[in-house]
Amino acid sequence: MGQSRIVALVAAGALALVATACGTSSSPAVLTRPVGLQLPITRDAGPATTTTTAVPPTTTVPPTTTTPSPIVPAPGWSVPLATLPPGGGFTSVSCISDTFCIAAGGGANLSDASGTVGAGQTQSWDGQAWSDPSVYFPPPATGPSPSPIMPAITCIGGPFCAIVDGSGFVSNGDGTNWITPVALKPAAPLPANSADPGSGHAGSREAAVSCPTNKFCAIVDNTGNAYAWENGSWRTPQAFGTGTGGTMAMYASGRVGVSCATTSTCTAVIGTAVLDWNGTTWSEEPAPWTPTLPGSSSSASINGNPTAISCPTSWLCAIVNGSGVSYRNGSSAWSPVQVIDPGGTLDSISCPQASFCMAADANGSVVTWDGTSWAAPVKVIPAATNYTGIGTSVSCSSADFCMVINGDGDYATFSDSTVG
Image (cartoon, rainbow, N blue to C red; front, side, top):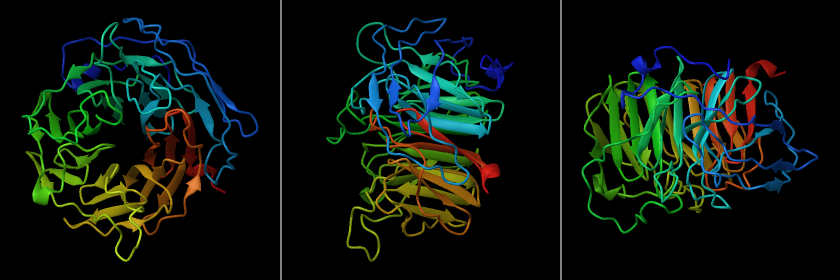
């Protein structure tokens, strides 16, 4: 796929948030190289630029040398590779085929070792290499944020991609060209919550987005706000407080997730709460987990703060929580949490179809479900050492292709055609 692809009429199928034409972005070439199985990874990136808005020279990636433990590729997996991350690190990836993935990142996540802040950026992967960065959200020239906080991305065929971040902005485009980010209208305010440290604190603002079509998207954030966009219009946002039985805090530190199988079936996780979209409104349901596993003496295996959800169909959803996963399969009831990654902390999950899921943990390991059982964890990339608070992202376009990437830009791809 060409790095400068401009998809005609993206605006016609895009989020009609502003009447602004998309601009193009360019930057010095991004180096990709094998992760040093014998040699260290050295990253030292200069400031990114865009043809429309200059990025301040203070936008940098910390020069860092790391020596990851050797990783022997598992069957189907590529050798781990590295691409230079934006300031703030990579926070999310979305793949629609084995030749089209978009990684998003940058901003002010404040969860990395160096506290760097950069422009909101995306990079596209064409099956062989990464493109130059596209800047979708330049940081302000002076003063505090707004700048993106932990951006999350979703892409579908077209291509059509949407990005939302914890500072309350949303953008969309074709993976290279982006509309100017637009502020989401906040929902009705909730009573003050002492657990919410406010913006500008590590992990204080995160959001998630899912778009089953280019005319419908759902967004949630970790302050309890839920949004739905349909045919160019935003429905009135809804806010959730303590909810059913006091199961959800008005503020939940850490990741949130949302997944829409159709325009009328979405499920989201915020803190310990589960929200459902029925095509008209959001509602909250009781949480499906307890602080500890049934029959377990350890509370460490389930952290009480689920991080991601994936719903390949309207009747099947899977949520990862600590070292385990919980399912809703053909009914409203969730299964007990099942440990699938002993000793690991699962960050993300992707289920492209009902008979295949892949979940990734903070150590760079993945666990795969074949429709019947989960395989043992397999380490495919190093654990992040610079952007340690972001987590590992996984996206599968099908059971035949997945990409896993961490905040540092270490990534690997899975291809079923290479097995055996």
